[in-house]
Amino acid sequence: MTKEERLKAEHERIMLMYETQHELSQGARFVFGIDEAGRGPLCGPVVAACCILRDEDEILYLNDSKKISEKRREELFEQIKESALAYGIGIADEKLIDEVNILNATLTAMHEAFEACLEMYREKCSKRLSDEFGDDPAALFDSIPSMSDSIVLVDGNKEIPELLFKQLPIVGGDAKCPAISAASILAKVTRDHMMIKYAEQYPEYGFAKNKGYGTKEHIEALKKYGPLNIHRRSFLKNIL
Picture 1: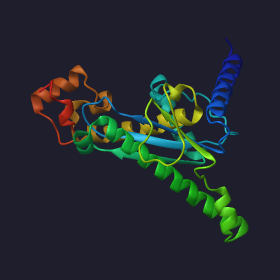
Picture 2: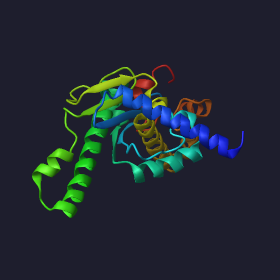
Picture 3: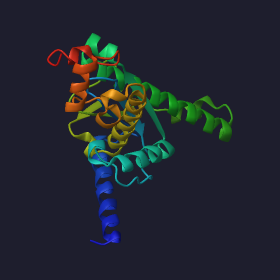
Picture 4: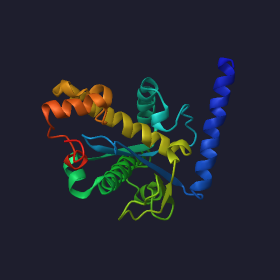
């Protein structure tokens, strides 16, 4: 397959993803995509991201972040932040994970990511309208996502508690809907960057490579050096 043929095939794949997203969003004017990264590791936070994309912005190679190379994830991370209408990040640290369990901590991070995304959109919209039309409350209100014209597409099979906007959980959504794919990449790269910083503090544990997952190297370091304050104690019961 030539380069041109590969690009054409990728374009068609992305267009099909947008078609799927349009069908699932049931005509909603604003489509939020939400996903998380880091439910399985033995240490560090679980990170969630929420994203609203422009329909006219064709971002090639969007997919489940686990199916994309690290180099391409980094490239897409910057592209998504630059072109998205808005995005937000939510973080639940190891203490909250131990306190409320990983599922509830993940849902908390997702709620935080949604609120951050909504706030970014409001701030951007307010500035744009102020520059174009001055202080026009009606124009601003009409341009802000509301419960009546928005939908939140959540990767997985759970709705986010206490989120008043309409939601639709989608199993495997990060490979089906561009907004969720973008959120998946934002969450994954954000968390990876955090773990690389931890690797500088704690080089013995190999966090730059294992990102906190329970690899042989990581478990051997745990047994030799003991757990750190960033380890999830509830995840270590069968290891130490």
